[in-house]
Amino acid sequence: MSLYLERLTYYQPEMTKALWETGYMLTISTLAAMLLGLPLGTYLFLTGKQGVAANRFLSLIFNSYVNIVRSFPFLLFVIALIPLTRFLIGSSFGTYAATFPLSLVAIAIYARLVEQVLLDVPSDAIELAHSLGATNKQLIFDFLYIEARSGLVLSLTSLMISMVSYSTVMGVIGGGGIGDFAIRYGYQRYEYDMMYTTIIIMITMVIVIQLLGSKLSQKIDKRKK
Image (cartoon, rainbow, N blue to C red):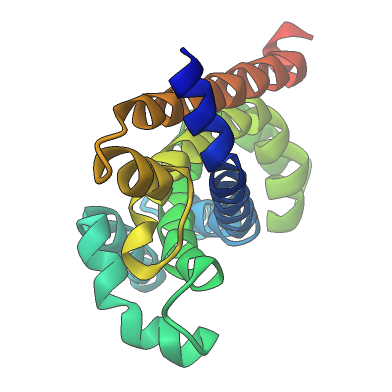
């Protein structure tokens, strides 16, 4: 036990840094999903076959992006984007650069989740909006998002949990993070107690995110009003 505490104290600065890197990547990718994935998912819904603004061409473009990014093996996706990351970010190495491919994946995943949530909105809400003469903007913000807000929060919660998992491989491009710490300081150095400690930390992060997301979702669930 004393040896474990000594190791924990010794690696504490690196572990703290790794937690900060994971938090940074998670924050940036989640914000990207909220700012770009939410509207993209909304457009997927609106331009679909049954959408109020059905447009086969736009729907094809939006769906192609989402499908390609989601079907691409993430590690290969990160490596394939290195030239583009270097061009746009100025570097392909480091935590900041790692947020670019992570954000692209977050946007695609959340867009699809948003589309599915909006598809579950009762048709009565849409018919009511039309009968009141609502514009598309009013339909989205005053009807769709209100009806779907609980599901949107749960979808965002699922996305954040996925991003915790995805961030573990960002050490490939120097992104760091708690997963990279587990591999470099735990597995590769045969100090498995550090690796398992890191795993417990990650599990705790996921549980906390899920509990907070579920609590918020229940609180704003329109069906329970």
